[in-house]
Amino acid sequence: MRLSRAADQKIGWTPVVGVTASLKGDAGSATHQPLGRLVQTDLDYVEGVINAGGVPMILPPVVEPRMAEVLLDGIDGLLLSGGSDLAPDYYGEECAPGLDVTNPERDAFEIALLRLALRRGIPVLGICRGMQVLNAALGGTLYQDLPSQLGKDILNHWQETPKWQPAHEIEVLCDSHLAEITRCQHVKVNSYHHQGIKELAGGLAVTARSSDGVIEAVECNDFSEQWLIGVQWHAEMMREVGIEHKNLFKAHVCAAKRHALRRAAA
Ligand code: MN
Image (cartoon, rainbow, N blue to C red; front, side):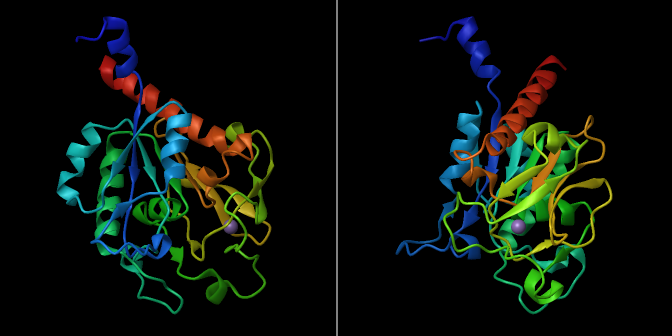
């Protein structure tokens, strides 16, 4: 059966958002499956994209970086998900005490994918590790372990409470694109990170911090050219408790749709 022209167009205009995945054994995704290695991503990301009107496509990190171009042909937006620590080689440091498990395959894949995605102007949303990958790929550095490198005076950024519960507050910069999305200056967020941005990459601006000064969100300086937002909290887990978290996914999917339409018109 052939689709009607209207249905065909509708499908064509539904943006596809690539969601990066982790491998079994990643620190952030331990499982007890007795089978082999697993490609996996949290359903919260997948549902976040679907509920915002996008079609999610899970991107396995076992794909060779040289195949990234082919994957990018099929997506209109890129969501860099959370997971294990990024290897410090990517920001020119040796391993420091407190560094957790890293995943070389995933690191290489995501860095390559991100660089190519930015060359194409694909809208990028980075969450937790995803924000850190953004910063490192653009030339910034990371704290390898916040508690041991910043001291005990910082807030607890690794909560033991349920994923949808806030752990601390962040202050959003008034004239940022993030503020347009959250529509409030003080946002309560969850916190599942022991790493954070140290030196900000050129091309990025800080758009939110927690009260201890830790960077909790960034965006592209040249936002009209490149839709790019990174958040340190897991917005996908808080979609049901606050419109500001849901809006982040909506904004990303809308940007992906605009990108798809521009590409179709070119
Ligand atoms: Mn935090």
